[in-house]
Each structure stands twice: as C-alpha cells, then as structure tokens.
Length: 262
Image 1 (cartoon, rainbow, N blue to C red):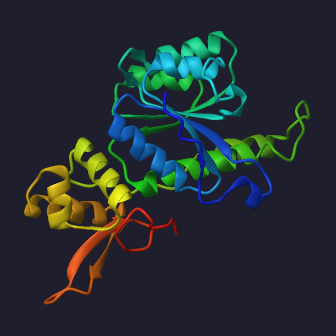
Image 2: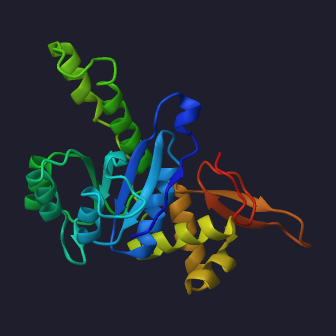
C-alpha cells in the first residue's frame, strides 16, 4: 500500500470544501502512478493512496491501513484485473460490508458481463484503457458535478423529478477524444510517467528513457500529442535548430521535476 496523500492543484482549503479523497487500485506500478498523477491534475480531487491489489484495497476500506482513515476515501479508481482477484469481486465484498464508496472503473476489460456486473454494483463511470487525459478529466469532472448535485439538499429531503434527472445527467460526460493511435498501453503509461518525472522530453530523450529508438519514440509522442495527452513546444538554447520537446498537456514547458501544474 502506497501513501500518496497529496492534494491536486485545487485544494479543498482554496475551494472552501474538502477535496474528493481517491484511492487508486491498480496492480501495474507504472499505470498506478500515471493514474494518480492524472487525478492530481484535476481540480477538486486528492490522492490518498495506491493499493496494488484487492486485498490492500479491502484493508484500506475497512480501516486496517495505518495512517489512512477509511472514512476519507470517497472514490475508488478501480482496475478490474487485479493480481489477487477481480474488481467486481472486490466491489461485492465492499457492498456486502455495507461500505459506501463510489467507484470509477479504469480498466482494459471490455467484456460485456464485466461491464454489466460493475454497473449493477454501482460503478459511476467506466473508463476503458488506453485513454487520454482529456477523457479521464471529463469523467472526473462529470463525477464531481454528480456529487455536488447532492450537496444543497440535506440527507432525507425529498427530491423533485427535475432534480433527479439533473443528478443522472451530470454523469454524462462530453464525448471523449480517441485514444492515441498505435501507442501500446504499457508504452503510453511509461511515457507519461517519464515526462512527469523528468519534465518535458525530446524524442531522443524519451526513447532513451523507455528503451526505444528516437524515431519510434517520436511516433508515439506525436500520436499522444495529436490525442491531447501531450503538448509540443520548441526547446531553444542549443546551437542549431531548436529541438521539439513534449510535456503533459495543460502543463508548462521546461525540464525537471519542478515543472508545476498549470
């Protein structure tokens, strides 16, 4: 279990209310870090930790992880294919214990039965890998609006049909952009993690970091930029023509881990 408690760019203090506490449940370490970073880039959310399997997630939700209060977890970012079990099985265990927590499935599983089971257990969004940051952001923002629809009314107060319709409509995010074409999911996650760690990278630097040629890295980076995951900008300062570098979309250019969220 990894403690990743760190607020996103819009802190609860700044907004006058608490951020949505998120537990990332993902058995692939690189993907888990990439998803956590995506969460941090969306205003109104805070990553509380990363669980690498279903057992850790269940322990976190039942208050068995030191330093992590289960009551602070509002949302699970849940992969369906975990090392020690299935996401649907974890959800059933949580519901059997009457644990109320919202779930957004973030998974490569496209099986209709899995989707049906997840929806029947209360998944509020289902995001299929690979996906772009704009797609992910739209899902989180739709979920946040969904939550906020309940805030003006105290528990137990009756809702009108119009209010119920508005709550359900809030979960309908805008049509997503297509995932980067020709970029394997593992490579997508590695490149996002590399740029998050090292700042903006050229194709040569990215290729060296993830173990592919400059030409291959450039093809992947260009596809991710076209899909809105990355942004392009020239790097000046060296002799000769400027080098094109790539940074995470909605973040400023510049190398190094000190690059701050926009």
